[in-house]
Image (cartoon, rainbow, N blue to C red; front, side, top):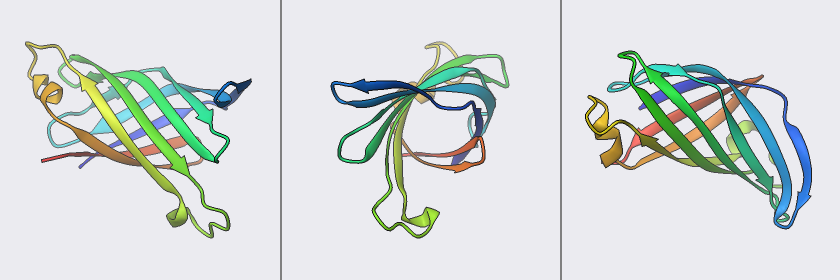
Amino acid sequence: MSEGHVSIADTITLGNSKVGERRWVPILGGRFEGPGFSGEVLPGVDWQIMRPDGVLELDAQYAIRATDGTLVKVRNRAIVYIPPGAASINDIYVRSVPEFEAPRESALAWLNRAIFVGTAGLAGTTVIIRVFKVC
């Protein structure tokens, strides 16, 4: 398991679109740590849609500068569902599918050949992302 701690700015609501309420959340940066890959999360953006059925779709795009200097593109798509009457954070469903794109000739090229899944939680203005490689 790898874990990221990412700071975000306030949500900007862009209004209702044909598929739901469009939101934009600036990603300010952070840190990503894992057994085969660690580095600095660079600024990016999380495009969001609050669907009419109450499900929030996320599409976060940013990059990570690995400790060896390699730049890795990240696209993390997720859904968030808070059921009516949710009593705690444990009742919230958050699942993601992070995709990594590393340079072909880099030591991190293995990221291009794997599937990952994740979970996320919020602690103030910090998103805590847990990423698991599917074996």
